[in-house]
Length: 352
Ligand code: NAD
Ligand code: IPM
Ligand code: MN
Image (cartoon, rainbow, N blue to C red; front, side, top):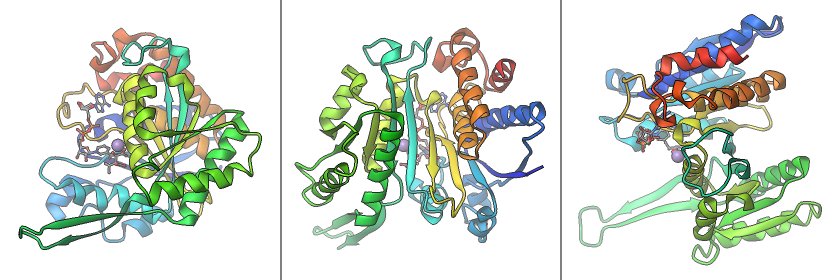
């Protein structure tokens, strides 16, 4: 039997609590299906590790992770360690180092979910955001000049390469074509007179290769309004790294909250492992209370199985999630229930 090697990085805060539910579900699938054989290896990296060692991960972390088929991550970052250190030394380092340049974030309001700020029926929110994931505003380049003087000036350089911009836009076009959906680009070419003018021109260019895909282009400010007032305008969405970060938290807000929003960091060439995670953070405000919603982590596990070629199990997990959200009273407080994190994995398992 083929062994699928999964590196598990639970990380910080509720990351640890939600990942354990996801692993429960995966372990159960392994029991049900003789063709599935997971090998999990746990890595205790994160802010506690940093407080002990001065590093977020072991020195050879990237080499070690490279040999895995996928990475399953909880959340990173906790009060006490500056966020730009914890994130740049772990999450962003992996995304960049493994060239996971596509971030796939589904925004789907499931039947039965009541926690939404959108004013539409449930079946009218079903989109997939393709976020550029390694460059743009997150390139990490900049300068801090004249520190502490009255001329203090800080530059944060967004870097948009031809290669990086084209490949994410093309990926989104392929997806839209395959799923027969519209593709919307979200940008800001009116004010960002280099990066977003370039983005828009590449979108326009690539669109000529896909005459069958219906396209739209929105400015980010208008787009976020329509996310709330008229989300059915959007099917496949492609956008830059920072805009994608922001619109997907709003997406969570219109589709059941942070506890339901998952993301896949994909290296399409499979040259390196891809990474799957809930898009929320470590939630220090509720960490340790057993009230975190693990459904986003479970959804991310479904994305991982899809990527690894277990499409049927991926769909089964999703439909189990759709079933449990019909019973909000059994779920965590964010879903309106009085359930605890540690019980949700078993609820999912009952439906598998
Ligand atoms: P957050 O996503 O951790 O929390 C935002 C709000 O959503 C909080 O009120 C939290 O209680 C709630 N929430 C989030 N996930 C939830 C869940 N599963 N169930 C129920 N409620 C949930 O964002 P933040 O507070 O801005 O950030 C906290 C830390 O996490 C920071 O250090 C930040 O840098 C880091 N962070 C990490 C990631 C990641 O690892 N991918 C993502 C976002 C933030
Ligand atoms: C996310 C997170 C990260 C991001 C942070 C923690 C660096 O917010 O995955 O959405 O901005 O990409
Ligand atoms: Mn985010």
